[in-house]
Image (cartoon, rainbow, N blue to C red):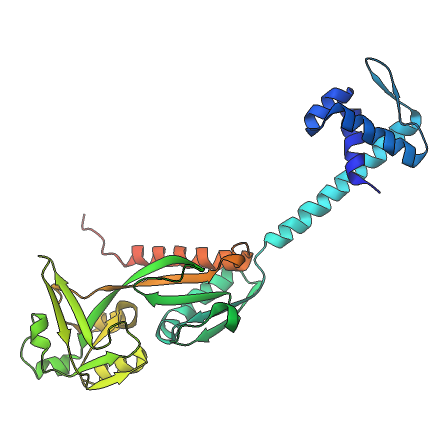
Length: 306
């Protein structure tokens, strides 16, 4: 069975002129004539009686046309059905994410994503180390860092998070007012060991002035969640991303220090191998994360008074 030859035959019958059919099929008239002749030879019957100006179907040719048309319609429906199924997000998505970000925000995001795409199952691995997506078998990694230098991966931004110097009110009450980075000298500064510069904090104010606070940490750890708990207990000062402390700042459990000095930002990246660009589940998750955080940031902005 040659579906291409059947399609050419049907087009010739419908157009009535070999040259017109050839033009619509983007073929030469000679190629179309050859296909029809080969089809008649294979079937052992004449389908078309040719004259110089017009084509006339034989009775067999008319019945064969009807059968071919129905078969081609069925083949097209089958193709469209399976093409649609292939585009529906489904299967298992393996995601790596930082521990602190995963614990605080991914439960809400993933719950919302699975309500919209229930056929996608998720395996989530929380770890602050940078995983090798290919070797470790992940489809996607969420990374919170200033920039991405690995050109072998596709990296898309989904959010920006402010880095904040914070402490508990009880700690602040025990020390002199802190208004410049220089006032941090001699205080109990805690360090996140996986940061780019774990023992140096960089600052810039609105006038463009810069400052660097270098320190020997009284406590250093590779878990920002652990450090936040230590800070909440009143044991020192730490640099932490906004997604980790914004609730505690709103509730008054933590205080943001040096509000007139910008301490930097961390970018939320969605990272995946380029070979997975056409995976429907991955594409939908990336798009969903970007939409979710855009909506979240919009709702978090203070509304203007009328």
